[in-house]
Length: 61
Image 1 (cartoon, rainbow, N blue to C red):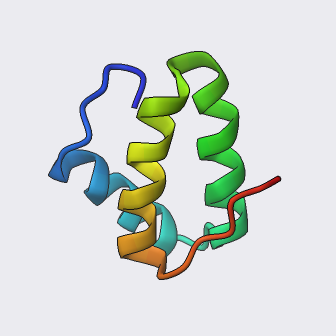
Image 2 (cartoon, rainbow, N blue to C red):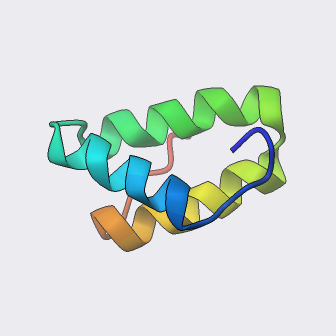
């Protein structure tokens, strides 16, 4: 995410996290936390990718 590489490789990592028990709420928190460091445009791109994997993801607010 921090490099702006929103590719199938990142999708695989998100899917792998889900398969190992990371909830959609936890994934949203991870993406939010990381977006503060990597930039919000990259964060939103990853949120969209996570939505594909988790369904509707809760964006912390």
